[in-house]
Image (cartoon, rainbow, N blue to C red; front, side, top):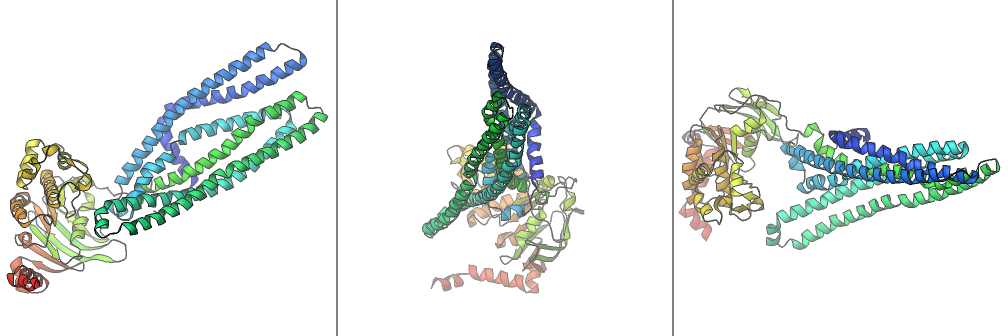
Length: 586
């Protein structure tokens, strides 16, 4: 995420979005050229009028030409603005769609370190900053052409005065570039601070119940105020960098006007026609303000570059992408799974799993047990390629999981997590995520299997009842039953149950066991659980301790061996005994 992008790269990235709409861009460019040419023809007609007035020639043709050229110029500007506005809207829409799409395609480790508020800021605020990108580029070209044509006209009127204008351009550009670099730096800091405000607000709101339970409102408010204060200071610095530009332009304008007057008086005494000198004064705005706009647009590009750079870090950095180089379909796998010499580390330094070796036959039921932090859920995450192994390999049906098409692999390996995540929408929409082709009859059949029909039928709209953000309007058990139904509906070839019944009561779990039996029938399964109801029916139990496998065998074999599994089993029985309950009661 620390990769830096050059201005040339960012400009090419911006042009890549604009070039997808070449027809609108071409129409806007034609209108732009007409605008530039017609805007300079007006002053040319004015010069002819003054010369005609001085010599006593007919003025009417030049007056009509002045009126016509200005009217056509106005129409060209309107036509240009309409098409550039359309271009802006399409470019911003495409950037926002592309950015969101690329964020979704990033690896899970990317989301482990990125705050949702900062990503929201990139999709919403940074793309908003680019809303004038197309118009700015069109205006930049317009002003550049206008400056060049005006300089050519100045050189025609007086080479000496025209030369002074040419010498003035580098002064404006150097000052503007220095100030724009300052503004880009301050804008980058401001956006980072703004993203932190979003992230902090999102974090507090997502945990508001915990905050209130532990009376953390004042602490949360103070921490938010600290971040908001830092954002305020960054905003002030950014504002200064932006608005100090204009006093500098006024100072340079006054300096240029004095120079032109002084040199012009000297030139008049050496034969420069008064009309030409008057035209220099009249055309000063035609030259100066487009020149300032050029510098200002460069300034704007620098501000946009800060937004483009932040977008590029999630849109263009291929190191963040999930590696989907495999082509093998996994839809018809049998479910033979082999972990061979697998090591894994989340941070690249501290191993979470070390020297993991085990095999699972097709249709076999395996349970992973161990204390919290032993690495059980990590094994499940590696199997669906949420993370890549640091060393070793994982094969399914004899093929490395990297050889399988990623989408196909994840359809074939169903994961029911202890952390239930539901989307805001309806119960029906959350179920159809697993199988978009499922009809109501199939959904009710699955809901019957997981004992969820009763509570859903009691809801006002049944399957079409609303699910609030994170399923706040449902109990933990209800959410887990919907999650379990979703897994059944997907009909995977391999099923991974990561504490899949941890949020339901023992009565409901006993009823769900029938659904579990149906789901696991003829499928390879890996169950991560602490409850004996899941473990005892396993063909094989793998015991993990601090990221290493310490025991493998059936329930009876492991009890006979003694060791860690036997200790865990005996402790479990002890904690469920009446004698133990009486002891902790008093």
